Each structure stands twice: as C-alpha cells, then as structure tokens.
Length: 540
Image 1 (cartoon, rainbow, N blue to C red):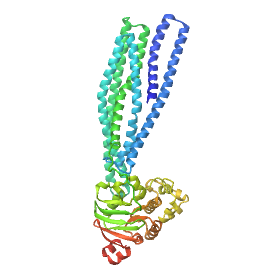
Image 2: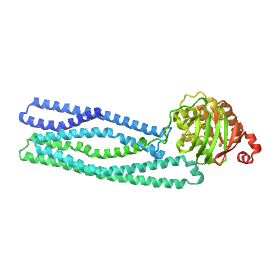
Image 3: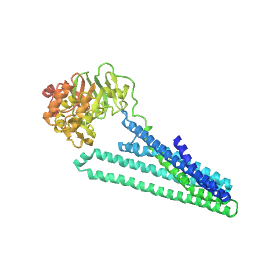
Image 4: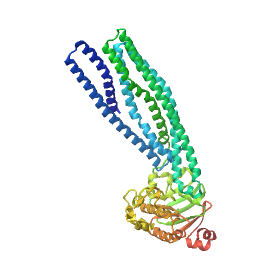
C-alpha cells in the first residue's frame, strides 16, 4: 500500500502538473517567442507524460497485487475457520460461509486500492487548489469549498448504499446456502417427489436476492449520477470564474489556460473522490460479515492433555438426544459391535464420539486412553480416534486420492482389499487412478460406501468407529467385508455401530443399545440363541 500510494500520488501530481506546465509554457512562449524555449517546454511535457505513464503502470500493478494477495489471505482465514476441528458458534450455513469466503473477502480487500487512490486524489486536488490559489485566491477557495461540499453530500448518500449492500450480501448468501442444501439433498428430494417444492423455495429466495440487487444498482446509479453532476458543476464554476477573472484582467492568458486545464483535469480525481465513500461502505459491509465468522468463539475450548498408555475407549453415563445414560468400555485391541435398535440412538452415539457434540453439551463423559475428551486437544483426538461418518463424502479426484488424500499412506492396498473395493479397481483400466466425479456421481451407492470404508481403514488409527459401513452392499460382499475388517484391525481398538449380522458375528462381543441404554452384552451367537428381541432385530 505504501509503495502503491507513493506511485499513485506521483501519477496524480504529474497529471496535475500538465495543465500547470501548459499554462506556464503558453505565457512564457507568448513573451519570448524563442525556439529554444519551445524545445525546453516540449521536453518538460515529455518528462511529465513519461512520469505519469510509468507511475500509473507500476502503481496500479503494485496495488492490484496487494489487493489480490490480501483477498487470498482473507479467503484462507475464513475457510480455515470453517474447517477447524472445533466448530465456531456462528449462526451461518455452509453456503453463507462460502459466500463470505469469496465475495466478501474480495470486496473487503478492495480497501487496499481504495485508500491509496483516495490519498492520491487528495494530492491532485490540493495541488490544483494551490496552483489556482496562486493565480487568484478565489479560484483556490472555490476548488476547496466545492470538494468539501461534494464529499459531504456523497458521504450521506453512501450510507444508504452501505445498508442496501449489507442486505443484498445477506440475501445472496442465503441463496447460496439454499443451493448447497439442494445439491446435498437432491437424490432424496427426487426420491419422494419434493424437488419441485424445493426448487420453488430456492426461486423465491433467489428472487429476493435479485430484487435487492436491483435496489442496490438503482441506488448506485443515483449516486453515480449525482456525483457526475456535482463534479461537472464544480468544473464549470472554476472555468467560468477563471474566464471572468481573465476578462477583468486579474489573471493573464497563461493562468487562464492553466485554470481551464485544471478545471477539466480535476474531474478525474473528483470522480475518484466521489466513488471512494461508496467503496468504503461496501468494504465495511463485507468486513462486518467476515467478522461474524472470524470473531465467533469456538463451540468448545479444547484441553491440553494427551491419552495415557493404551488406547481403549470408554463411554460413561452419556446422556444426549436419544441416549439415556449409556455405559460401556472397549478395551485396547478389542473389536466390539453395537446393535442399536433405534437409528436415532446410533446417530447420537456416533456424533458424540466424533466430537460433533461438544463435551459440555452432554452429560457423562467419553474417555480415550483414560483421558476425558474434554481434556484433550481436538487434533490429538483425531490422531487416535476416527469416526467414519455414515454418509462419508466422496470428492472429485481419483479412487486413490479419496482413499489417501495426503498421499502418504502405506496401507492403501490392504484397505482396498479389506473393503472389497478390488472389483471397482479391476473394473477400470486406470485402476486406483480412475477419475471420480464430485460426490461420487459416477459410482454406485455400494461403491461409494466401500470407498469411504477403504479411506477409514487406510487411516490406520488406534481407535476406529464405523457406523453402518455395509448397508449398501450385498450379503456375500458384506460377509467378506466383515471378515476382512476384523482381520485387518486385529490388535487395534474397533467399534462398529451396525445391525449387520456379518459384522455382529465378527465382533468379539456385541452390546445391545435399546431405548438409549445398553441392555445386553454377549457374543452375537449367544444373543441369537437366548434373546428373542435381538433375534428379531438383526436376523434377515
């Protein structure tokens, strides 16, 4: 900003110097009529023009680079807040955060260019006022008074632009959030015929955003028109006043030429001046929206402890949602399955273990390696405990990049084999480098589920929690997956929340979760033999 301001100030000073030099040249030439003087004058104008050209070129290059760099920094900071392991306590949807991280970041960074241009325009107006004041004090005073009056009027009008822009940005963000929701839920919407109602809902939100954009454009048009008229009035007033003073003999011909030239020239800095309040208000509106994300406190404050020896998992009296005081323990290296009779209880248990629910938002405690999750940094929990989501996201890329996003995993072949993703790999000539579309659009439901399972197994964490990892595969594949997972995870702690008989049979023991509490505990086969409710719930 400093270098850009210096060069843009030099540019405006050179622009202002041109009509001043032209007036001096006219006056000097009329007196001396010397070819040498004419040559010197042409050389001086050439120097001024070169200075103007180079300072503009490099000044704008520096400022635009700074603007782009600053916008990038803001985008990264907002995105980092959205991707932090501990969510921030902000009432915004992901689509709104996306709009803030893009449009609002760019508009906030525009202040990097606005301030230097404002300062350089001020330099031009001051030089013009001083030069005109030296010719006649009334001309200088007219420029100063006119500039102050224009800025005062436009600053009042810019407040309306700021309030309208804030509302427009909020509505556009809501429309973006609606689009994100529709994309995520498009398949189920088509399934039960709700897509038309959803599209009508989006059309309504989008129409509101469009109407507000039209309002902002209308206000901006009025603002630009008023600014243009005021600038033209000031330029005309300076020109007419200079003509009157020349007619009265109070300024000479050279000073008249200078005054007329400056009156035309100051239209540009005045135009920049008049646009600055609008851009400042837009940048402030965007900055306030970014502050909603950047200054929002985290949902929970992570601790600083680390797990003790061993990586067992213990759930002690947890009450949250459908959970009514769940208690169980998974010893280090044990493979345990949870048969949840109510899907809501399974979802709530997975959410608690995945830290989607802050530890202070539920009763009881969850301990990892003997340490309460509330006392551990989230990054440490992620190092030792992975909860694979039921609807694991598939990203655009390749099979390999979805299984091993960092490109550093050494267990990709074993994970592919255990998850029975081998047939998908063998089906395509590219193998693991087969291109996957966004959200796995070119994969079947079972293929997406096995790809998500392969990613979880490849992570090779000390404690792995899987929730219904085989609901979209056939019975034969399910049997093979259950056996392979048990074999691959041997010696490491594994908890599977499932109703799959194959996975339940592969587990060392089964916990029955009914009505929010653990009501039974035994092997799958013993429960089948002695528990009628269990037999009805899990047999197919």
